[in-house]
Amino acid sequence: MIRSKFVATLVLFLFEMAILPSPAGAAMPNIELPEIGDPTHTLMTNAQEQELGEAFYRSLHSQMKISTDPEIKDYIQSLGNKLTINSDNPAQPYTFFVVMEPVINAFAGPGGFIGVNSGLILLTEQESELASVMAHEISHVTQRHLFQTFQAASRMAIPMAIGMLLAAVVGAKAGGNGALAGIMAAQGMNAQYQINFTRDNEAEADRVGMQVLSKSEFDPRAMPEFFERMQQSTRFVGGRIPEFLLTHPVTTSRISDTRDRAEHFPFRQYPDSMTYQVIKAKLRVLSSPNPKAALEFFKNHENRGTQQQQDVAEYGTALIHSRARETELAKVILQKLVQRYPNQPHFMNALAEAEMDGKNFGKAAQMYEFGLQRFPQNGAMTMNYARALLNTHQQAKARQVLHDYLRYHSPDPDIYELMAETYSKLGDEAEYHRYYAEGYYLLGQTQEALLQLHLAKNAAGGNYYLNSILDERIETIRNEQRENKEKQKDSPF
Ligand SMILES: [Zn+2]
Image 1 (spheres, rainbow, N blue to C red):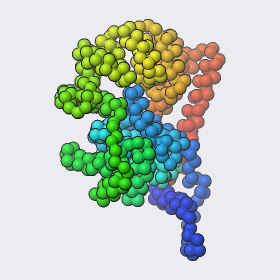
Image 2 (cartoon, helix red, strand yellow):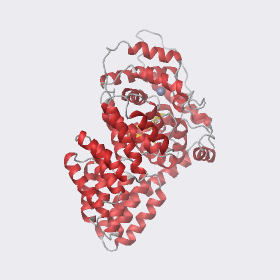
Image 3 (tube, rainbow, N blue to C red):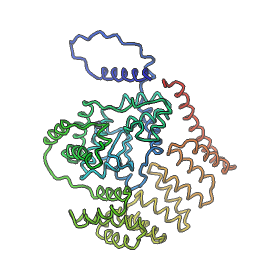
Image 4 (cartoon, protein in one colour):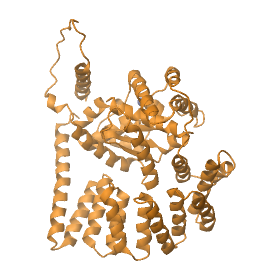
């Protein structure tokens, strides 16, 4: 264990030496470096980092609740995209996602996988505050601050690497997260892999992040404001320090540094997007353990702020009615909002969902058909349209809708499950198992995925084309498993 940490440290050291230009004429000290083994073992390519990132993301699904709500997913990804196109490395692919956890945290994994907890989003009071945390995380990625951690992980078997990355990146402490503590104990690991961003790392991520923020038309002043709110929030959650502050310590001097820097940017107004407000209301409803408290929150806001803020509070109230199966109450509010905001897909989607809740599937299907003409390729409407079609025995049409959508969008476990359900209703057992397999695979449940693929093969019978697809898939997954086993043998643990 000691050896691996040592090698990783040394590699980072060499890496930093390599990019620092040596001052002309300065005498280089003659340093004798110890043997560090085969260097090809220690350098990770972009492709390897991407692969590690994907495995990390799949495994995260079994450790924490990642939101699959298409509206939430679309929002966080598009907000992230707005920032990354203005970053130092706009070509790097990023996946942004929301973790349904009240803990105030955000983190970056390998391969540009950036998670933001619902608790952090709900603590923000302006969209620029949320953007400032994301810009800060993006800057840790572009400035390669996690390089050392990912290097160490890349030499381990995937389950170990994931345990370490979760501990390091998510900042969980042994005993803090039961499942994770179990993994770490089983792998003989302790908390030595906590990420400790250096003070310089943090200052750099703030500085670079603020440039990204400003270039992306968000308020640079929101960064120190949100740092301050995070610090103050400790008072409200029983003195518990937000996870984010443990992994990215915010000091008083850091706040004053960012504030000084923010003052150099011209002052102007930065109105929140309506989608930010809508998504925050939805997150409040979905993450509230107590619907009554959430309802009270929205009722208190229905007469406060701008007209738009009041309307969003009404939308929150409608969602709570919808969840409580008070469909008629929800519909009255949502019909008014749809009329007032014909260009807002979220209100129309919520109204059609209320029809679904009331088991008016035919009516809901009509509304989605109309909605998709106005908002083509809208993820939430497409998924719900397919559900409405399945409930009105139009499975062939549902299959068409889902396939069309998948042509331009990356799949997720939910859409695969819907595909499986569609093929089940079409009586196609082989495709049913095949889509279940792909869903399990994305959730990091490889054994279940293989089992489903074998069931698919049994059902495929003499279908030569499908059989060859299934064989290839089984082979790929088995190879991945084999590679992991081999890494486990080489692992220093
Ligand atoms: Zn940080």
